[in-house]
Image (cartoon, rainbow, N blue to C red; front, side, top):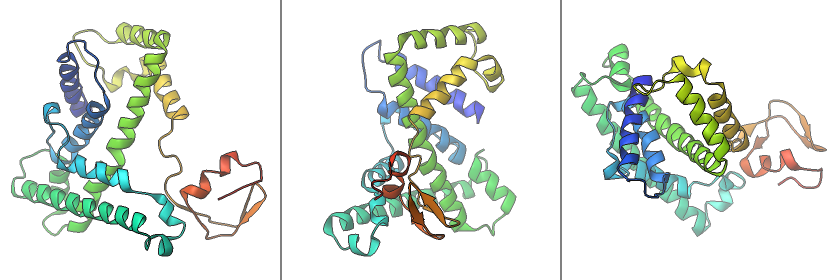
Length: 252
């Protein structure tokens, strides 16, 4: 993992330097870099920044743009409304296409086992009788759960250090004092970079990515802000959004 991250960082540095100091939107670059690391781990390949998003990333972008947890509130009713029905169809269509592409990638690696990656290691360990569906969904979930959350956190980090130059300078000073110019950072440097680690943790604290997005299920009878929630109740995003802030007046 560390080796692949370092390789991607070198490519990222080259891309930034190619801009010649001019301003540019780092959103696509950040998403591509995090996606490339995950793709490299899973399939042993990456995408060039000059090519932009590949088909998998573009399809996930469609899914993220149309996915909505609102439908968890009243799935039977909302699925019948054209607005939500259209969004659900786009999500399903994009995911079916993603799975088709991932399946082809898995089959290519199965034919050529020389590629060092997660899929080839999985196939070597499990053997030819592996669970095709499990491997397919595992690769899909690793991509979906990894690149967008990490990229969003990194973008927030860029926003904060751009607005707090004193913090940016302190970060640079600590890095320069620990890591020689001739090499990249490594995990061995982590104990000697307390301010860098504290900064990352602080960004994750104040800009937590989708902290309550997944539906939850109460394990026992509970009382929250004066409201009784029986065991086995499905708690969705729209409900949970109000819990930390309620003064006992409204829970949706």
